[in-house]
Length: 68
Image 1: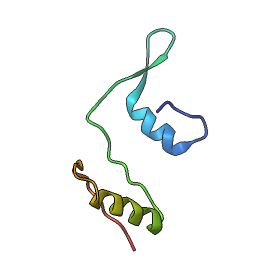
Image 2: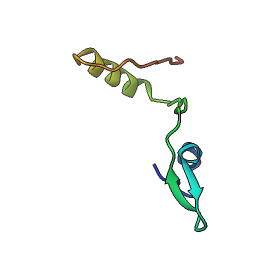
Image 3: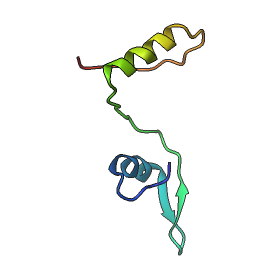
């Protein structure tokens, strides 16, 4: 996820992981501990995701909170 001028959400996330290095200030990926990201989904899309996860045998743990 490289910074995209004018796309505030992507720029904010990318700023946590891409750091200008060297004399030419080339952007380099610097992994860290990660960041917490909150996504806003339409209820229909959320229900589709939950349905798909219920039918999947191997699912990585995830945290989900939503506002109705």
